Length: 165
Image 1: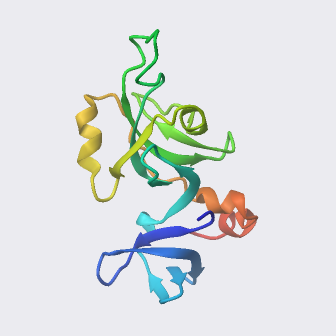
Image 2: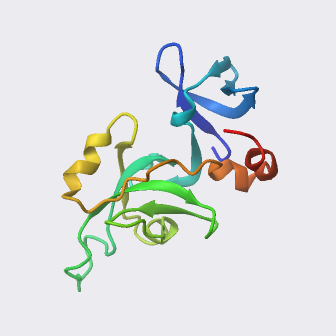
C-alpha cells in the first residue's frame, strides 16, 4: 500500500485510490480502471501504518490517539485521548500528528509501535467537524504539506518540489 495516493474525483466527488501523477495543471490518480482527474486539495498519500482496528492511515486523516495504553497500571492524568491530523513533516522526515494550539511535531510511529494507540475517525475533507469536538485541543493545518509523503519516499521530491502547484 505504500506510495499509493487518493483524491476526490472532479466528476463525481468520489474517492479514488491509485498512483499520483500531474499532467500540465491536472492532478490525476491512475489505477487499473483508468486515470481520473482529482481535486488537488484532496490529494493524500498513504502511510505504511494501520490503526488499532487495522484501518490504513492516510495523510489528512483525523485520528484519536493517546500517550498511555488503556490498560496502563500507572496512568498519567495528562495522557488523555487527543484528536489530531496526520501529515508528512519534511523537516523531521516523519509522518506526524498535528494537534494542540500550535503544530506539534509528534511522530505517529511512537503511538503505533507499542500497543497501537491510534484510531482513524475520518479525514479533514469528509468529516472536518470531528476536530471541533476536541474542545480546542487540536490544530488544523492551514494548508497541506505541498509535496506529501510520496515526494520524499520515492525520489520524486525534485520533480514535485520544482513543479508549480
